[in-house]
Image (cartoon, rainbow, N blue to C red; front, side):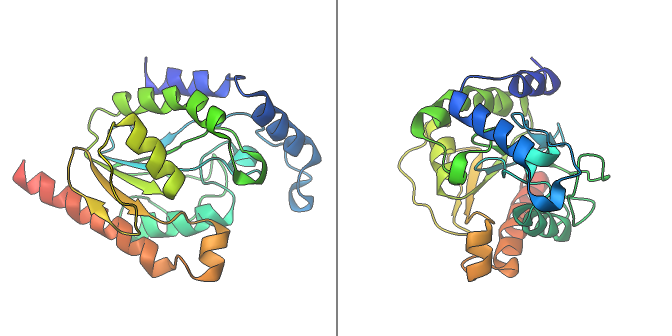
Length: 223
């Protein structure tokens, strides 16, 4: 299986009726600002550099973000926050991500989600999380150059820890776990709830990806 064929399998998935119904309903009702747009309304695959050494793992598509645009972290405030930091630290060629054909390209990074459909209230249930997990497992195996993982939020941390069969580790912002490999770097999720309250600032997220970039650079020198 290739990343392209995996993406096709993800888009065609109908295993979680509650999530599929929610995404389809949102795509019909729409938000007033996007009434003229055609929503994606389907599961959202990962995106980025197939040769990436860094995996960035989030929670799930936003109802009016990725569920509208069809690309992870694209078209909402979480994406605005994330891609600004990725651009500042050399992982993205531009600081914005507005739609699938906006020219955005990632360098040495691949972005994915723990759940591929937008869940009601941004809360997938445990069964839905586990149903979606095999997609991420395959994706990780297909990223042959993977050296590090940045998890955005506790749910992504828990999902990745389960997939990688990690020992019990602590979660904390900008907390790096050097072992086992790939190394794991934790961050608060750039949700509007976190960024509007100051729990996660622009500088805090920048620091996470600056540390990831330094770590990759150090490993390149020692290779």
